[in-house]
Length: 471
Image 1: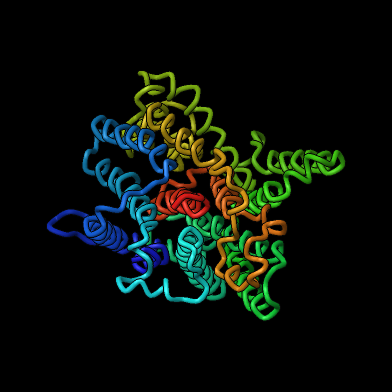
Image 2 (image 1 turned 90 degrees about the vertical axis):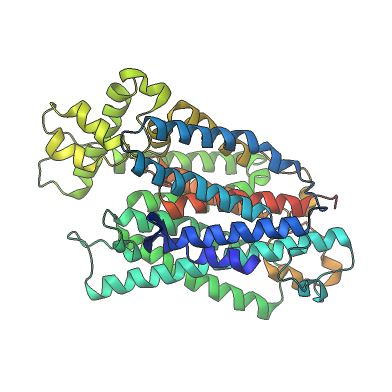
């Protein structure tokens, strides 16, 4: 089953393959998710006596239900019910089904295949609790490698586009997302940034742990190095300033979280950190501030900044107070239409602003406008649960890489070198990168990106299971 899930992760961009079944629009990605969901249900029925024991899963139930309800209400008030239902299915139902699939593979009867061959591998001990931890870490690694492989292939295709001159008018690349009629270079950046942060985290885990055999060390380091370089180069080719900033923020977040105890105990380190954060904020402001004196030929960056600020300003000052939009939103998929009707008589809006107002260009505003206040609250609730400390059992937060299984026997129980390199740190850093991008764009509002969002949360939950001491 884990390989089926890994296939879905690898093929996240397959939502671009669209077709209809009995007149109902669907995608290749949806079909894979539904197949995995049915398989998961069958496996659960076969192991019905085996009940999950992790309370972390239950904490998400209420906000997820509220999130789904907000989607249903949003569909009900949307003028175009067909489009709204499609978005509801692709952005809420499918990703949550995938999340359910991911958190369901912690059961011991779902190892790698029905024969449970993994239990016979020498790296797994006879201790039941340790087996559970190593099995789940091993399976998490499979999913992470599938995601990295997907990112590398997408990056290679994007780089090839650049080499062959298949770019936008301003020289940016779309990658495989050029198959989407409404695509933007940002789509490619949204997809690749969390993967680049994942790779950097895994690589720094290996370096930070300093516990691997030399041959295994170099074997994995060069693989991660090449993958990171290719993906980062593809991100650079998108020309997305937010993506570059989010990548830097994600990598820095990993360092800060990993070494926070050392940083906060040293005044010089703390001061340097605050100075560095201030510098990043200044750079970020300089790259996003509006230039109201810009002429039409001032360039993409100036016009992009000005358009974003106009959209934010209109959303906050005009849309939110209008007709109780602050409470109910505007309906799923109805943002641009609502924006257009509200600003139709404003100077320059129909020609210069509205065509770019597909979304509010901010993740939280986008969720608020599409799903209403209930959707925004439930989304923030989910994020709060994710960033809340997952476990007090820090000694079991072992690096999720399979390479750790190569440790000498006398080092397996030692956590002095790797306690700061918990898998949670990687997932936190990935989510931070997504949220940083979300400050200036809708960084999860796409089929594959919502699934990636829920994958990160799901991985944090199953790793939490592996760190629990009770079997």
